[in-house]
Image (cartoon, rainbow, N blue to C red):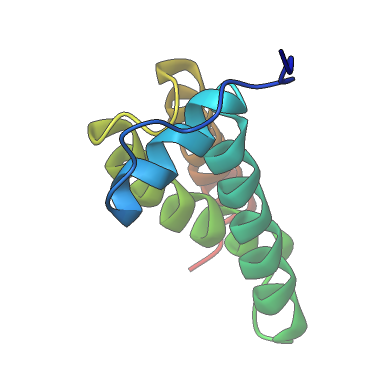
Amino acid sequence: MVDYLFDPPTDVTTATDMISWINSTTSMWLFQGIIGGVFIIILVTMLKNQANTVSKSVAASSFIVMLLSVFARTIDLIPTYFMSLWIILTGISAIWMFVEGVK
């Protein structure tokens, strides 16, 4: 008998089933990595614009990723603590913008 490192997918008939299987196999790290990568891409893209300050770039990118993480949590693709992390980061970056007086 063959021992698998992970349970092979069973009853996978749709793309949603496959995504759910991959996410359960990786202990929900798949979408956490995707969301973290999206944050970095948006942040670097916003920092390229000379009109944006660092605080504005962090606030905008964390807000976009927060919305994405709320959606991902709603369909149970990420754990609650990961969504909470982005909500807290959005709040901190909004306070940072306020302290700097960014308009």
